[in-house]
Amino acid sequence: MVKPIMRDIFFLNQPSEPATESDRKTGMDLLDTLKAHEEECVGMAANMIGVRKNIIAVHMGFMNVLMYNPKIIKKSGAYETEEGCLSLAGVRKCMRYQEIEVQYQDVNFKQQQQTYSGWIAQIIQHEIDHCRGILI
Image (cartoon, rainbow, N blue to C red; front, side, top):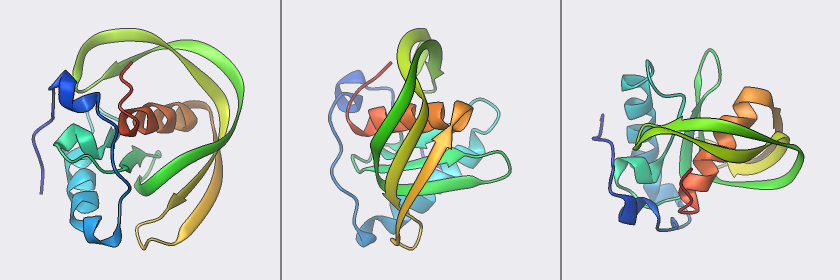
């Protein structure tokens, strides 16, 4: 189900809680909402649809990927960039890393570990920051 986008800064600044298998519906709602906003958005965290759980959805070219409880375990190649956010007006400067290694649970709650670089890595970092209550 497509959900409205949360714009309440106080809510978005609160860290999210770990996701469990009982949060599958939230994961599906997040994918639906990302799909509905694909023209202006490449990633979303569950708090952007009003649920404080560690769940992100990332557009990876030809498909949207759901990650439960994502955690960056390695990062390299720091750089400064500017980003926008569907929950906020305008763009802001932020620090990102060119390459990251991420541990997460997939759509079936199976443990995964992947390395990402470039644009996809940047999106994942932005969404994990959302889960931590960090806004650009």
